[in-house]
Length: 362
Image (cartoon, helix red, strand yellow):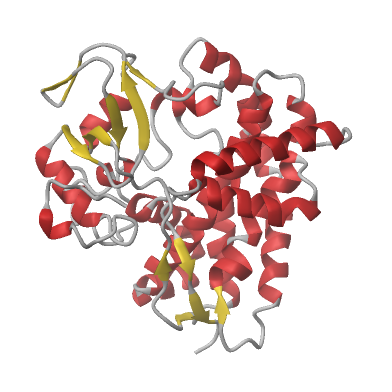
């Protein structure tokens, strides 16, 4: 896969394995036209203030693909699509899920009791959010393995185009066979562009949270003092979740836009019709915004891991609740959890771990 050709010293390094050198170079250059890690020519915006400006700029359009997917539409279509989805993911409804999420977390961790070694992703970080989002949306339990496979292929650079067609076909079959129920699919059944937006909700509704749990736990286990502190005083866990999102959020490369007119960002003119990449990961490690941005430090200023402006993640509250419960349950039941082996990063547009083995008790 082509890498950023602007810096030959990074030619043998995968962005997906270690994006930090890319972030540093992008911020140093400011808004610039480069070859991104997915092999596209794009104007990359990477400094925190520039990213916030770009995410709110009316002339940087999200409509980079057709079809009416929520995150790829602009007002007024975006406003009309978002309202019912936001209602379905209301704060009240998400908070009401806490007891069920806690139940799922504890059931999954029951299997860790007495185990010498476990894979965090396979046994906890993945099954927790996929169970939650499938129950919330109304996706049958027997379809979860298929959903997982489709989501992974959709987010892998080499398979995403073909996988999208198969994912859309799966959703169409689901809508044709599913009966009514107390779930989000039933609630949204009469809304426009439902197939596209269910692909989005199913994928984003679990993949990003899988990586929040995995990436955050890795950062935690590499900071034993913080691990002990949170185990002793779990009231700080929500702040830790925010810091894990900032430090190593799932949307590392960021989000795409297209300029509908000449746009000035950070003193640089981006020409009309240009492809733009707004790097959330680079912004969240901007040293002009965060002191010592590459280390964990609670109590920092807000981040942009969930985006900014009208496209702020509609599922942010659910992700935070799942993260708080995941880390709280892990630390309560296995406060001495340790790494068993160096984890492996996967090649995916959602930054995360493919394998992550730990020992529940040292």
